[in-house]
Amino acid sequence: MNTTTNELKVNEQSARTQNEKGETKVYSPNVNIFESKDHLKLVLEMPGVDQSSVQLNVEKDVLSIEARFDLDFSNLGKPGLVEFRGGIYERKFTLGKAVDAEQASAKMKNGMLELTLPKVEPKKTKIEIQS
Image (tube, rainbow, N blue to C red; front, side):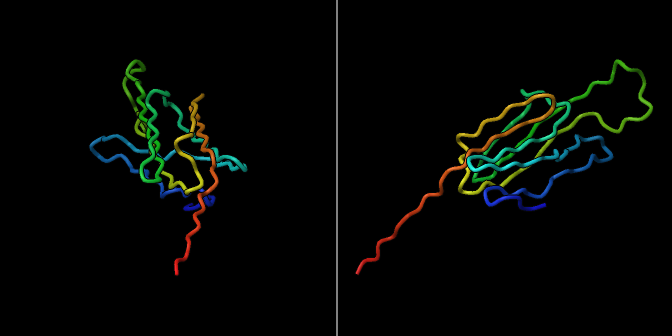
């Protein structure tokens, strides 16, 4: 999926797989996007993430969401099969001009990140024609 609304473009998912050296895996969290007349709401699924590890940044109209999570199974015994061990969630969105990123708010509960992006009226400029 590349587009959702006029105010938000979902960038290509950037999930990278873990290599043979066991380097950290990068996951692209699932997202639901809701739109009302005055805001956009993004709900991202990021199980295992602590709120303190979430980083939200906007640079050049691109919203970047990143969070690290570590899982410690050392107290469970010798591993027979390990398919997941932690990693990074990463997702990017291109914001439209009708979104006020400076007034955005976010909350985290039970592995769900809820981000509210208020809409603003796009600026209109009238250009005078000189004779």
